[in-house]
Length: 272
Ligand SMILES: Nc1ncnc2c1ncn2[C@@H]1O[C@H](COP(=O)(O)OP(=O)(O)OP(=O)(O)O)[C@@H](O)[C@H]1O
Image (tube, rainbow, N blue to C red):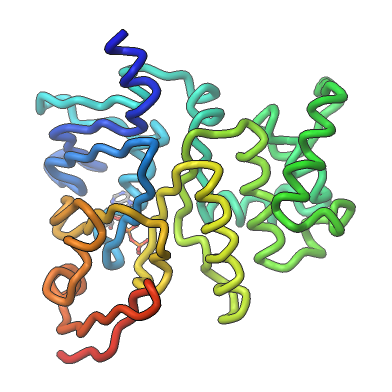
């Protein structure tokens, strides 16, 4: 019973996780992080602070250093197959976006979303889909507000359109959470604004974990923030308690005057 409750509530439950790429060179130290389904998080940190490494830890592409006692649970379980994880947790990175731009450029928007069922890049002869699965693709494209480009190929799409398709590919499974790694990279100001509004809409469907170094992207529905600094999570907790000029100045190593207006944060001034 207790386990079922954990399964429903805890997406991420990490304690004392250390990661090394090379022996004796830690890149993440003492990571403690708990993310629940009724929360939305922003993970904020400067370049090189370890955000991508943290995502690789969550996606099981990197494993904790076993020299330390640790806990690494996803959805209340210690062990997951990669395929199962992909169904419960959509991870949208710019690497995936670029990969589609190169290896999936002749796929249509429809096919990109459909390929989510097999977590593949492209649709192959042996892939088999039910009528319901095809209907779901149309439903997802409509939710993404890109139904009208369903026959457009990846190489004919704008950055924002392709990113929505890739999110759609994850949404096909109705994931419990979506990790969005710097989702507005390559978008102009208007496209950025519309993309953030789209993520706000997504947040009504699933837990959002937004990984970014842009404070302005932290939208109203975000409830919690983790600040990465010096190979670890320097501070974490409720957004209103964590996001302030002092903490941001520390993690970005520059004096920041953080302000808030209409429930959005912005940097008023920066001083060395
Ligand atoms: N494959 C690797 N081998 C060795 N060290 C690595 C490797 N990948 C990353 N690192 C190091 O790990 C640290 C954290 O890097 P990471 O890419 O996780 O930071 P980040 O916060 O995602 O940065 P950015 O915002 O620039 O993408 C950096 O010091 C980086 O040089």
